[in-house]
Length: 288
Image (cartoon, rainbow, N blue to C red):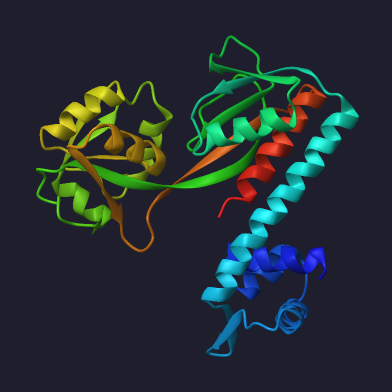
């Protein structure tokens, strides 16, 4: 069983089909399809089903792919730990925070285990300071120095409401429906989230909007009958802390917020910062 074949299987699961997976891998779809057929023959278990002339992963294939993805992540982590022992990298990486990507605590835990001698120093972003790397989200703010940005992960946006809200029994809503709802939005002068929401509602602005300078004040509006739109991880955390709140998902294509990691273009990136950059990209690419 070739490692490349297993990587191709995971890419098929990640991309949602053979055609986009083949394009992402840079190989012909016919070649990828033959690899998958050979894998089924070797395992003696059907992993795909044919629908409208296309090969699609069946439930067994999806479960197997997910286990393979976990195993590949462990192999990558082991390789990075071996590299850490070889390189003996140590020092401090300064990271400026403009936004907090989902699963960041898990990333930091894995990275610290792999590279115990590299210290990560997180600071709220200030234009007067210099950082090795920045963590941000769309829309990116104007920065005093040139930066290259790399996408880390996209996170679903959801609506947070009170359990006394008229939508309390609903599981899904449409973006256009928010126009008739009082909605709490973050202070437009202090939050990259407010910039994202302004773009999100540009073609369909809310009829009523309450501007609040903090998440706490936004939640006060929500408890009093308004709603708000937040990234999924933050919304789940808030609803877990406050049982009087619940979240409602958007329809088939929910809006997503893209989180990015930024590096300076005009100065060399230290080796330890480069190691964190590479690790972060691998970590998020391995997420289901």
